[in-house]
Image (tube, rainbow, N blue to C red; front, side, top):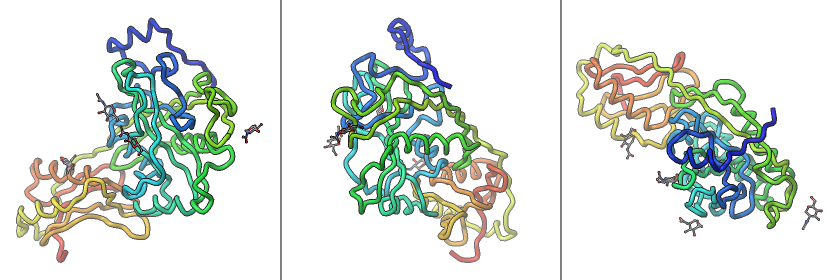
Length: 320
Ligand SMILES: *[C@@H]1O[C@H](CO)[C@@H](O)[C@H](O)[C@H]1NC(C)=O
Ligand SMILES: *[C@@H]1O[C@H](CO)[C@@H](O)[C@H](O)[C@H]1NC(C)=O
Ligand SMILES: *[C@@H]1O[C@H](CO)[C@@H](O)[C@H](O)[C@H]1NC(C)=O
Ligand SMILES: *[C@@H]1O[C@H](CO)[C@@H](O)[C@H](O)[C@H]1NC(C)=O
């Protein structure tokens, strides 16, 4: 489905007064759909998506659900790019870089640099001149590092299309959040071909000029707390459970899938861990589950259940 979305200036002014819009066309207010480095911004996450998909944590979690990791353990490969989204903030460096995660652990994102792969940079349109809250993504597919980390032939269209196919493959989930994505294709935002906006597209790679606009619906499948646990739960000290909680790293992925599962943390005899098949949660969610289990009627042991078969559990463990 092709459609041209253009917001007349009147609508833009009205919307700037607080009405929700999917995004503003940066080019109407002096911005660009190309990064400063002349790479196309070829995906927009509509501001009409569920709010939790648009936060910093939400955009990483959504990327995780699509199979992307938060760059390479903080080792940023290549410099950041900048975008001017016409929102009055002028050129702003990317908020996030998400890389295809081939491996079963977060370190897998580093492998992308060896074998090539897909990635996208994220920019947020939130300046006062065009404060939509939409996310603008520049997706592309790269060659292996042995080939200078360059974009592959047709790598902008190919990179975008790969993210689109991952996003629309059905319901994807991470950290107990289910995401459904619909896509609308928009022309007229990006100039097709290799001309860019006068400076030429980076690497002289032609683009088809289409932008994929995602509307993401996020829902948390939470089937509640139970207080089940070992018969030895009564012997646990709350202090040891708190000490286990303190070991959680918010940005670490605790998981039961893959070759090297890191299912959780423990201290003394208190364990806090993920249970189920192919379950993956970030540390933030582990901490929140701990707090909810403790805030509920459970004394010490208990579980928070999310997706079918996945739960975060606090229980007595024989050894740490
Ligand atoms: C943007 O990134 C460049 C390159 O790393 C850096 O020199 C510059 O200070 C950054 N700008 C801001 C505002 O952080
Ligand atoms: C706008 O988004 C940027 C990038 O995510 C963020 O650093 C900044 O705090 C946001 N500004 C406001 C006013 O929310
Ligand atoms: C850029 O690509 C166009 C066609 O895609 C080609 O005609 C032109 O020669 C290329 N320019 C350079 C500098 O490679
Ligand atoms: C870790 O995540 C929890 C839950 O969202 C939050 O309360 C806590 O402040 C975070 N800790 C750090 C160090 O950011």
